[in-house]
Structures are given as structure tokens and as C-alpha cells.
Length: 221
Image (cartoon, rainbow, N blue to C red; front, side, top):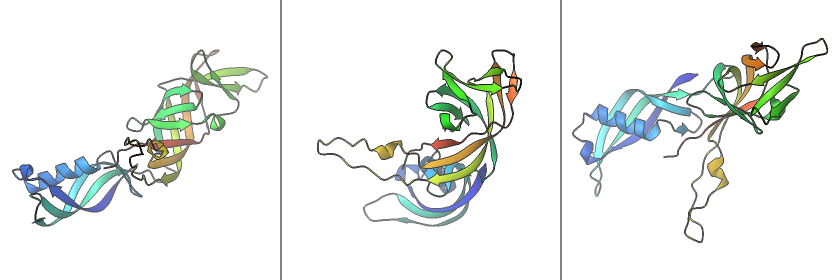
């Protein structure tokens, strides 16, 4: 789920941070710049692991800050294909079942990818799988918030976010690109989901297959 990515960057350290040790100042700047951001074709950056090389620092005319080229390793969230992850059902809506990883809140299993037949219960605000018991009867199995789900990563998509400019009125345009996640995972449910039934206190759904998209929204620096 987490990997070490080796990256290179030029770190700018403002004069008021010169009182710190160089390693500490670089560490703080790299975490500020990259943590909780999506790095194109790399993944979601979590935290700096270590700095492997620090080159000479330079101060350019008209800029009192120092500029230092560094090579470092960052902890990155980027699951490998077919990896199984564990999340929780966050909520349900007519758009599908919303799942969270704790640090990823935008995971949704669309209705047409839920176990068939499923329906949305407006009163309970939950999706219900009308499970066929095989004897001609059906159990209504509710997908309740807080229940655990395991899912398998099957694909990934990186989308480069482009900057938006002001419109004719001088206000910043609300571009549709703002709503596009820079990092998307295609997943399918891989194991048990703990649910409640109207006719039995607790049940487990085995092999609940679904296709979802995990959206990691991150700010661009």
C-alpha cells in the first residue's frame, strides 16, 4: 500500500529559517510542499522518509533565500495492482456506497456495481442487497455505516490538473477540472462485508463484487 519513491527537487529556504540546521529546514520545506499532495505518476505523498543527497546551496541576486538541490525518499500511498485493502462504509446515498480508508474519504461504489439485486432504502438511508437464500425467500441485507469492507485494486489513473485563470468579470472561474481527482483507483470488493439483516441479527456477505473509484483530492502546490 505504501512505497518509497526517490525524488529530486530544489528546495528554497527563506532567510528566517537559516537559524535551523540545514537538514531540518529542508525536511520541513519538503513536507510542507509535498505532504498530502498527489505527485503525478507517483502517488499520494504522505511524509518524508529520508534525504539521500544534499548538493551545494546558492543565493541568487535579488532573492535572500537559499536554493538547494536535494535527492530524497518520500513515503507514498500507491497500492500495487491486485492488492487487497480494508476500508469502512462511511455512508450510503442514491449515488452508491461511500467507503473511507481513513485518509481517503472519496471512495464510492456506484449502484450498478453493487451486488444484484440491490435497492436504496430512503427511510434507512442505506443500500439493501435482496439476498436470495435459495429456498424461495429473500433476506434484506443492509449495508450500514461503520461496517468493514475489503476491496481489491484493479486499476489506477493519474489526471494532471491544469491551472485556471480569471474570467471576464475578474473572478476565478469554477472549472470542472477542480472536481476531477488527480489520482483515481479502480477497485472491486474482495472479501466479507459485515451487514445487518431484518430477519437475522448479523450476517457476513461473502464474495461481494463491486467496482468503485477511489478519489484522492489533494491541493496543487
